[in-house]
Image (tube, rainbow, N blue to C red):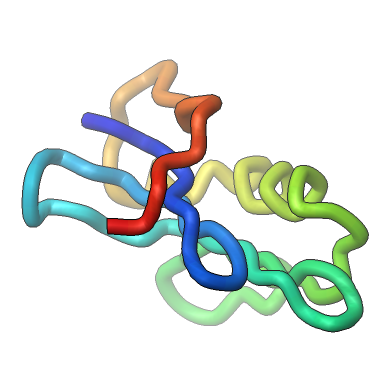
Length: 89
């Protein structure tokens, strides 16, 4: 099981991967004119898991990671996002 940030055109996506073709997007950050928008995936409706106009990419990623959205899909203890951002496929 891998958990990593993948670079996208205007931001990054947090990906949980169990192997080729078995990926789930569990969060993301995108750059806007006024800062960064961030979201952490959830089941159901929870507007508190999204925020707009965060000043920096690192703060936005920390916002997403604080919710630990990957725990919705796996119960592997100690799983943390890789430090290196992977390039877009």
